[in-house]
Image (tube, rainbow, N blue to C red):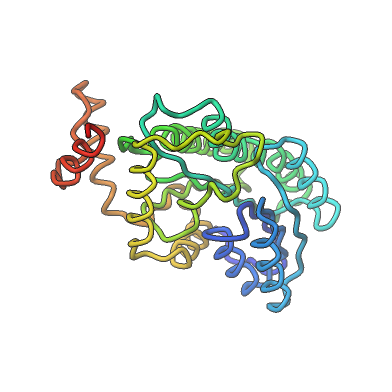
Length: 302
């Protein structure tokens, strides 16, 4: 159980907006040292200005989490400034939708690069540092939080590339939990599985690197529909990013692994698990809101 956050160091990727920013705000209030990373410089600058005003000790770097060498530089700079971190929030993520066969190689490389390899690099680089700190100091306690999504436990149609990436994060996190339990009692893990919460995720294409751009090709009908649906669902979310960030800190304090923003959504996960256990074909995801399914099929078949 971790109760004292003061003077502890937290690394946060995706710190310029959404959950990353809200977790940084809580960290500043608790008197933590903050290592802030984001790919969007202006958003990062705004976070830095706010944290400075709050009096937080910090280090900020523009980082593309999909790039091993940039994450290595972040890890090295963190260690040089604050030593081994106590908390790592592998939070940076991007969204993309559309029918799964319509995603280009560049779409896959971008989404998997950020959502999967970003978490992989965070785990790969910071866990050994944290383990060394734990070995050197029996009082050291650490925790790693990986941001997945309910899309890591469900497979909604027309957002396959995102589902694939978030299932990988859930799998990685569950394995990390088990692996850490083999070697230490001093470092915990959680996986954050938010449902629709108003963050900047639906506008992530704003930070898509030039090298992985769509090459001027127009989005397909299904991608446009996917974008519109996710814009609507995310923007109408009732649970705020700030509330979810507080849930994350509560979960760290309680050493709770699964963190859900919308516990009622678990009913859909149960249905999926029952499909698996009974080897029955996947249940219609729109069974509870048939009009949505009718609308989506009509739009895609038009």
